[in-house]
Image (cartoon, rainbow, N blue to C red; front, side, top):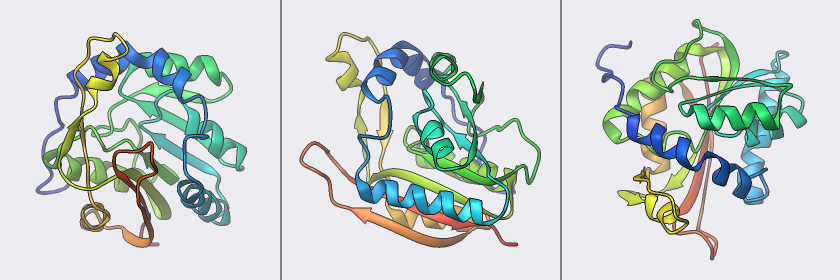
Length: 222
């Protein structure tokens, strides 16, 4: 653990919530069709940057049911996914048996230092409060190879929202809080972990979205 980085967050509530709604979530988001073209442009830029480095292996950290892993595999990468929720991982393995998925926390990744030339945190940081963010970025930077790239996607803004109400409206008894962050806040966390910002995208919400969306691309020092 890096000096000054907080201990892992208690994710038991998040794990329980996503185990409960795993199949509903996977059915509602079977692929990346929900992403805006600007969102996917950042994903494609990440894929191109990793491929240009000559090693296509990437870690999809917080992969859920594996929809982004499948998308990135289709872009020529070799994706491996981890997620906190065994229910999500079970669905990912069912949907993509040719890929590797395992249960793990973002704050304690089961990989050695410098393991991947690419790491993606696609809407993976949103259930961690500010006090736990430094540990996530420290772990992502630790497993990232020198010169490798990190892509982070998230709802843009400040404060938090009760997103459990969405699932309660569908008949699921869950509690789930989502935290919004600005691109500047995310950049500061990553830079504190030793990464350099390459590009950022911030867009306004679509009519069906409650918040703006953002993604930031970083590179580890060579």
